[in-house]
Length: 431
View 1 (tube, helix red, strand yellow):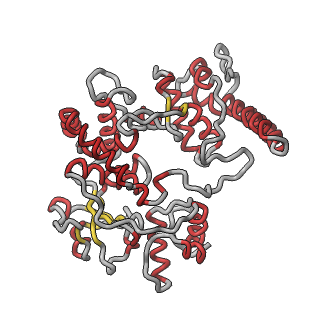
View 2: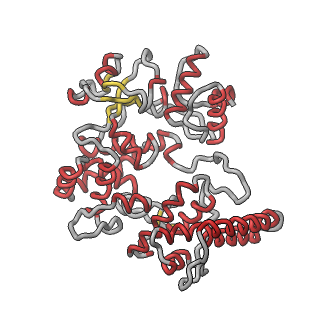
View 3: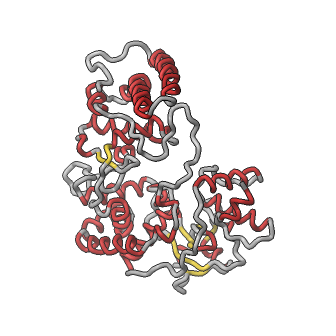
């Protein structure tokens, strides 16, 4: 499929192109609606036609403005069609809604996420590589301020230290999601960044990705690659596919650029007495760690908080409410969340890093049994809480800290013992 005629860029201004594209899209959308009543192959063909028109009239003008040539654009999309098997897609003509199932592992059972075989593989592999790359890690910590164990934990979690097989074509994934996913506005700049990578000389063979379009050993989205990829071995290149040193340097550079505070920990597992409301959780409800200690929160190790940490801000984290371990975390925890917007992900990285550095020690508190809820169930509960004036952070079906503490506040207002986590009874009462 040739998207453009390389020798003659589209004529006319961007506004005129967009207008023409809208008319074509409307016409094709009408055809598509009719096709839905006929057969799946016809539907797919209609979507392909609409996709091709979107490439020409919508994406191409912006790609050209970023310095992408017609030749590069054509080569990138040769043979590419929307991959309708990807999750979180919205068919043309439909309205987006939270999916019933939760595709991302970060939002499933915390106990499963911290399965010992998974954590153990990262920590064992991390300790082996801590010895192998000791000098590299020491140099990177001096340069970026990020502990080597944190870099190893992310590397192990993201790609199994480079062993993960990436079977998707990044252009296909990013183009599909930029064209028709629930979060297409987030994927569009990533697709444009991928085209810019190709324009700069990244070979197409390197653009194998996860189902979300993430690349290489650190699983960078293309925009992150352009901003944060770093040379760790001194050869003048930032190779996140075949260079371990560049992979580690790129992760360190990413964290530093996103605000990592050198010299501070990521957090501490703690015991939270019943007298401390679980609804105090969240990055917007921080206070000096010494104040949390004065309220009765103590480290499960029995040791006091380090003096240099006690004077600094800390934040209560209870990812499963009263049904699991609790933590006092530092701003560095939220830097880890910029890598993957999930409390459980950041907690996994911090926990694995501790085990790489200090030896295997599991969480003191276990993960309690949680009700199995669909993402759509949680979204319905969130809408109910919003109707009552609670800020749940959006009815997206994901039980983030704003949802958890809203649950706790609602429970307390009804004279119930706050758990700060959704369950089937809450869903039934609030939907």
